[in-house]
Length: 105
Image 1 (tube, helix red, strand yellow):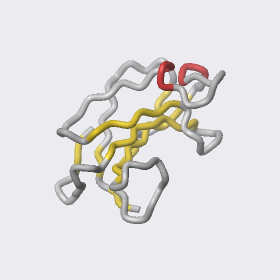
Image 2: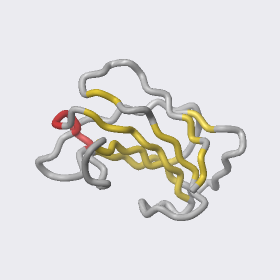
Image 3: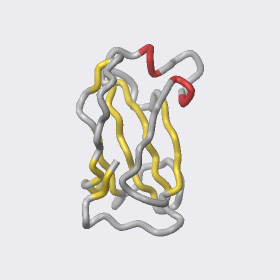
Image 4: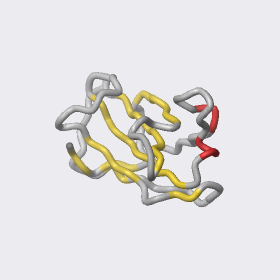
């Protein structure tokens, strides 16, 4: 995960990284919340980060990884937040995915 030059955040900001099904609910399949201490940052999402009981990341044939910086530390989407997302990832892919946080809502 890397940041574009124009991205700003506060010491209290949090980084949410989550996977969403390509053809499914907007509810994340798996997610983690991190303090923002440095970039670039390497993160691994797995079945251990599942958000819904009985629905694992490995159960989905395709998903997208998204990253979002929140100023108030909550998961809710708000105007002005910085984010980035991957291309579609196929289950079982082992290549690293680089997400550039460079878009603002």
